[in-house]
Image 1 (cartoon, one colour):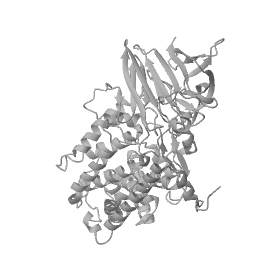
Image 2 (cartoon, rainbow, N blue to C red):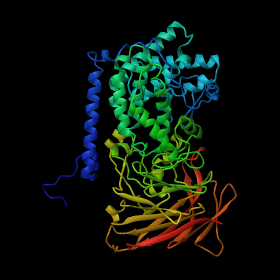
Image 3 (cartoon, rainbow, N blue to C red):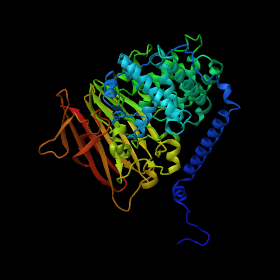
Image 4 (tube, helix red, strand yellow):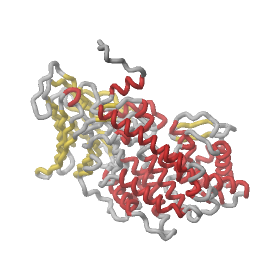
Length: 584
């Protein structure tokens, strides 16, 4: 019952705010005020009294053209010719319509459309009709969105469009008729001025970096904008220092972010020498450390481990950026990425990468997953245990499920995730999706015992709800043919006795290419067959073993059916489960 002094929340928003902790409310208020301040500054700088500071509004002379490192598909032009536009995993039939007037199937599709990254496919087609089509589509966009608002003019979308137009300027401008040339260069200059003044309005994380990369590239490449280049370099350096951690990881803890970032930073870095300018130290440092981190997070199949938003990857994209690492020999020597919160164990043909970090700050946690102490394991090129990974834009309905603890190779307690989803509409508006919190503390250490490598870790993600800690110990044999595991549940420094038993489940998701069968007469052992036809056994004690259906969200063809080993039991406050996988 409410007291007379108490009043119920007057709105749905206030109800949501009431559910937030004091720390979450404080952070939400800080982020909201920061967005308001940034928008106010952007509007002021873009006013008629100040925007003249950002150079000419006509980009009629390009001094340099950066190289495009992204993989191109010439067949994309043939799809356009028959009235199809396939982006972000969705195919739209446009027929005789403009792609800019059809209803987009997803936000990702719309962002890619208005970002014009697909111009590289038309350039790769090496067809006069493709060149004509590229110019026609760019002019069509300009006529429909001149000085507009909404998604096409969000700072990161504008940044991606500027990068694409500048990179593919020869496609758009060489031998173009005077009218087309003037329309495109006038729009290009207008967008440079607008973004130079309003980049601060970009959300935190990669969107802000994309906007600043575009501003810096434009000031380097387009005549009449170099007077603001020093400021652009400083602002980009500040943002890189903030978002790239000392070990090379991104502040979001999503390793896949680094591939996209390098595909933009590497061409940008090459543009300083022709302008006889020294690369900013922060740029060189970010590139070097991020390339090292990408090698660290790479599994035997050539792709990145699926943690915190990493999903369907591109072997070609990753290989392209790693080819620019002229310092690293290709070998990964460090075992820990302490700032990024990952640990790597290697022996023989086996690679194991584990998540031993806390979620990032709320403004960077929109794609983070509740995968505390989860791990992935590959043997040679064959993936064995894999997290579900992030689904593609076409499978966006799986997004929430892919972020849950149950989609990861770790322990789930009380049918709850180890992280809390911070539910508030304003948070979603500020950072793109609902962020996560918890655990607040994750401990880990790596030791060697008689040649074996031992990873010990624990997290407090379940302490607020159940008062229990999850401890995990992984021991990889020196020849890589055996992995022993120990999962333990207990109180944080004190014995805990629950009023009733609490269910737990330890998940081991198998890659779709792995075949599994129950051993006859032994309910605690299963046999695994790898694509290379080698046979391994998985054995457990301390919990009931079952083979259950699973979903691999990060498959290249979309969400794919797979299987998982699940160890189920119940704890009264202290429990432990031992398991191992070994080669027969």
